[in-house]
Length: 478
Image (cartoon, rainbow, N blue to C red; front, side, top):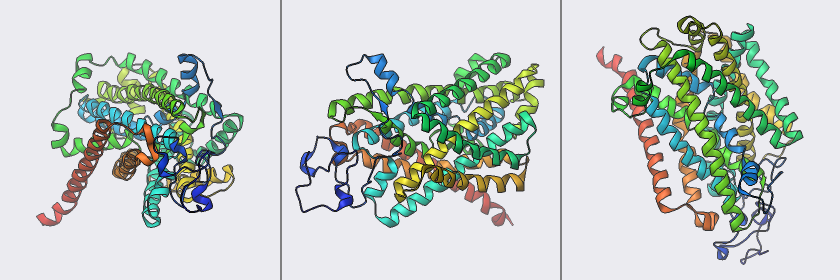
């Protein structure tokens, strides 16, 4: 193992990123999980209680290795089908029919590329996105990025917690504030499953995804959507940009699909695999991690599309669905199937509970990566959960049932506005040869990533402009 060829490094700088000693710039192309990243380098791997705990068999065939790497992608995919997506997809389908299916498709392709870059960063550099920010940026910039990330997680958790609470109310008649408090139990569930092993947590998540898929498969069969309309909906239209109302929903879909906290989450949980740390081992790990996340995100695409298609087939031109409550109340009468509304609520509960679990993990990763706080796992998770539970409880008490859908849609727009502050650093980090070595993405892939970042920034700028014009227009008119 090599040490830094310069003067004696500080303890933090020489600390291993992946339980190896630090390597200097002269080692370009070698094991860059040990690259020197400054005096704020992480002292341990991300999620230390789960770091490299999932074995990867050496010399095994393709399918055995694929099975070993399968899991993190599905944890990430959960964030792409959370209750915030439901609110935007229901609003989009009921108001504009199948037209916004193209936005879901494009957003999903963006997500696949960005999550691939996250896997590269975690595997090749041995850093999650939060740790990389801390190592690369100054303390003031880091503080601002951390605050923005926590706000994004709050917005995300607001959607997830409210979604779970709504589902509990629809299924069991539990009041919203009580349902919000019940969602704190996911902390105990995470501790229990992770204590048994990270694979148990992944298996639980995949099981809930299957429940969501089955529920929507039945409801789509009941709804009998127009196949021609669905296919046409996947073709982009200029009306999406020119129609302010449609653009607002479209950006909400973008924010609900490409989620900032998922970029932090994925770059961390790919490090739970105990693969070989040489270049060949990393190259293989990146390949399997990319397959895992791509397959999982295609599941998310199907479920998001199913929500919008269901809303378009059942409500467009018949009812104006403003809230999840309306969708639940109208679904069975419109489709003529009593069980349709129950299946809808069961899928919502599974989606909300899934998303609260992964959101809590993301909160832990962000807190550890940016602040390097070392406290017991149960306390970390309670803190990150309370950051979301408290505002969600206040919102549910103040607004109750009315306005919950608007709050869900607004939370996704907030997430979209925060996206550039996660996407731009991610692309900057994976572009650095000092960290990525031989695993730096191609220039063409990086150029495509920058195009995606530019699209996100331009859409957000247009949204802010339209909102500002809407706010000042009455004053000007008067």
